[in-house]
Length: 220
Ligand SMILES: Cc1cc2nc3c(=O)[nH]c(=O)nc-3n(C[C@H](O)[C@H](O)[C@H](O)COP(=O)(O)OP(=O)(O)OC[C@H]3O[C@@H](n4cnc5c(N)ncnc54)[C@H](O)[C@@H]3O)c2cc1C
Image (cartoon, rainbow, N blue to C red; front, side, top):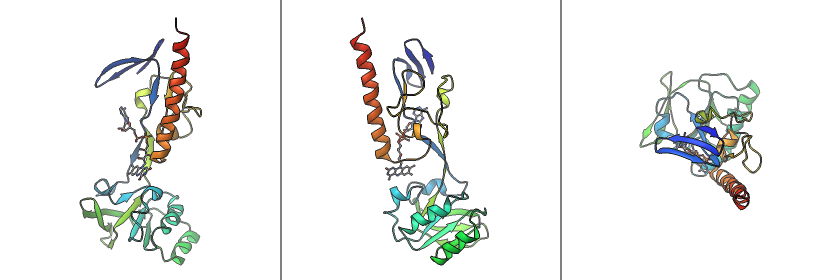
């Protein structure tokens, strides 16, 4: 990918292209916890977003596994969907004593053990096995992945990033480089939802079309 006078030069595995405007919509890549079985269950019975998948997993025996302090807040979100809940910090001490007491008072199970594996069939979780060999029956789970924008291919272009290392844009999707636009999670650096990303794409498409229209109208 290169900035050229007329716009951008792009080399892909499907050929080379030259374009006046470029829209980056490469979303995010998530890093999942290193737990056996997580990949097989992710997106089927283990998710990251209670707003997206809480309804489908409602009233089931659930587990949330994360070694990040955000797990306490996450537990409160999941408590809206199921009262049969285990909070597991996967070998780390990220909950305060007060938080543990609050969770216990709601009959939410708390474990600081490391998870060895998520076990199930065809991506449908049946049990969680801990490193000490104990197991608990769970049919749904949540994890908190780490998220990264996928922007390595833009390295040669000196655009500005925001504090989440995503593309910094204005409300119309314009980056700090003329002609370079971005939409969706490539601009947030953190997870959103389909409708949010799609709405962003719609706004930015309009913005690109406006620029092209203006440039073409006066083109001699
Ligand atoms: C397991 C899971 C469940 C979800 N459930 C829901 C849900 O129920 N409801 C909801 O609203 N949202 C849900 N989401 C979130 C939703 O998927 C995202 O918010 C949305 O897809 C973000 O859109 P985007 O266009 O920004 O990025 P994406 O949809 O991630 O699109 C980016 C695209 O760019 C491609 N790409 C990346 N790098 C390159 C490259 N170098 N060259 C070419 N192509 C590239 C990727 O392959 C991908 O196709 C879920 C997400 C996950 C992971």
